[in-house]
Image 1 (tube, helix red, strand yellow):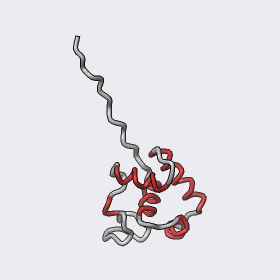
Image 2 (cartoon, rainbow, N blue to C red):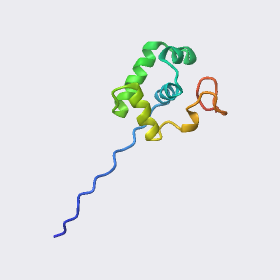
Image 3 (cartoon, rainbow, N blue to C red):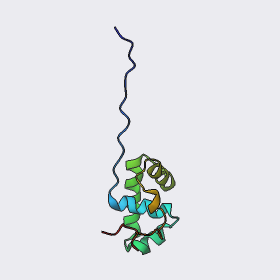
Image 4 (spheres, helix red, strand yellow):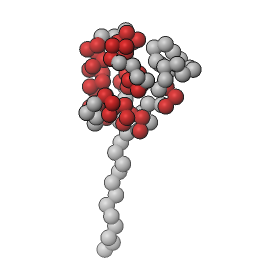
Length: 96
């Protein structure tokens, strides 16, 4: 009989839908909800719901915590954290 320690699979990295990732990236850039609303042209209610879903998916209690988790888990690419990064379109998405 061996005394092998039980192995535990590392938790699966959550996948963020594009809109959740986009909103978190814009928050990480320092934009406020109203600024995200203007930049993306979507309603504040939609942004609030999108961020709520992202928080739930990441196990975060706050938007700030969600951004931190997304960065640590490399769900948000560091080069995309600044809206003026070359290669980023005005809407915060990578060019097609």
